[in-house]
Length: 206
Image (cartoon, rainbow, N blue to C red; front, side):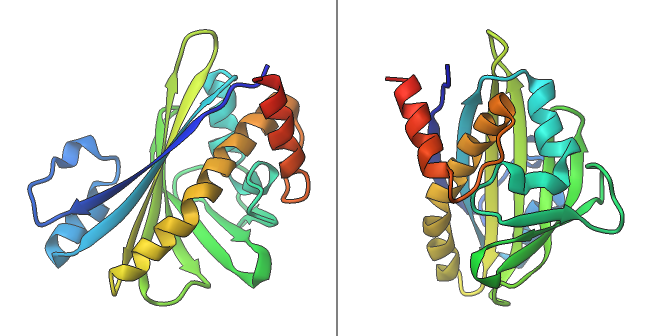
């Protein structure tokens, strides 16, 4: 039985105001934003998966370079610099349709609890000044795991971030649905088979 739900929460974080740094896994990024007196745009997606935390951590972190196996929006991905598994400072290269790409580095890790991924290079315009994601895992009853992904974007001008956030809401939800399906079935999730996967999940939950 497949179980899924996702929630997109857009948070407009005005860093001119007081912030509590010790509650955020990426303190260095937030400190930088505070100094620059700018606004960071954030989108949060949550997903409950029918898998124990260790399996979810393995798919997200240990198999870091294989994100294309469960994210239908990524057509190719691989680790860089000879890395064979996820680790601090590990880099991966992700390719999207239309020739777009991002290179992402693991910059912070709390073993089997959370990790932060920062974009170090991309085909996006220079207006995208900083871009990082925080993955958080929480064990639930009945061998389930909640995954929370928080995407943070800084752009200049700020209005560009609004458009990017709007474009990414649905794909991020699909990404975590694909993650759950891949962990449960071992099936590679692609743009071609994802509509049928959504249909299968809907039927299983009806």
